[in-house]
Length: 252
Image (cartoon, rainbow, N blue to C red):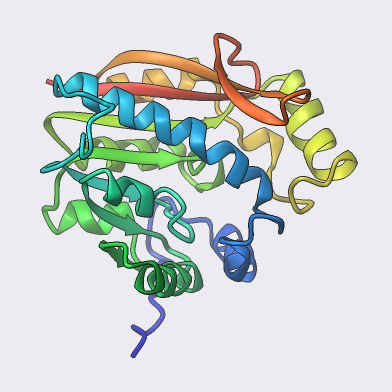
């Protein structure tokens, strides 16, 4: 039986309109040709980045069979579980949380069918922190641009990282280039994403993100852009952080 829907009205970071919008899209998460098709193409790049960064941090072989074995990992805003499942297959003990109840139900059903071992919760990172849960690796991928309070959200994510652990965040830079490509191009011209997926004024610059992370006791270790190659129809890592980028930080 599904858990009853939770009321996150009192949360400092949840944007209820964003949660409702993702609830409406929930059943399309695993359709590689549907509204999430761009995320499916983007996923291998961010998955490889996380795997390699985590393996390097713990001095492991990223090419080994289970490079994340024995590590606890939290995926904040997990959606339908597109990152959770492959990370669990790399050996991590994965928890995926999302305030959108339908997302979590979709993720659970898919994991049951695929045999993936993932713990899913219809919850917020603030709740897990209040409960005392801490993780070796915390991910917040393409989430921070959808929250109501960026600094409070980052504080909660940083608090969820164990001493010696890692935080990986990905988002969109607030530049004219990102407005042209991520909103006008991706949503209105190419129709890669449903219209209204993003609000440009909610995009976060690397400097803003890194300053907030630093205030919460973590040290920046890497900043990496992700760009689209139209000839190869694929995404790749780049020094260009003008649109999509990821940051890596650790806690002493």
